[in-house]
Image (tube, rainbow, N blue to C red; front, side, top):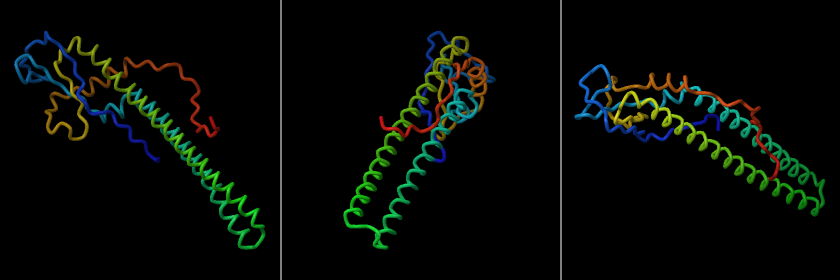
Length: 201
């Protein structure tokens, strides 16, 4: 979990406009059919330059690091207990009952660690999904306002090779990023608790 790969779904974000004017101006994202205006935005650029996206990714990265640290520490404790049991057993320092009791305790410790790993992973996945949904909604809501003046019929997301070819004159990424950052109003930050919750619920 050293890196977080947060993927914004590469689906088309549609901005319909029935009264889009016909344009032959090659300097702007132009019409490919009569009255149809198309543009696209680069997803990777939005992810790396949109302030909301950058801030949320930092929060998620901190949470991922803390989860990794917590699990690694507990794994080391478990391994040390196993090693000590083996050492004491080989040195005949334990009765059979004591050895069995220690082994049972270690098995429970391992099961608890597995449960903790699953719980923290589920919580992190839910938080990541929440981020992706919030990011998508933020972009779509902004484009609805943005498109009131632009009158594009279709605004696509370009991610990887989902669009095989697109002329750069249809690229409105920088304009959209500038608008997103200008309209972004971060909520009052509460002190984020980025430590993994290791207590049983």
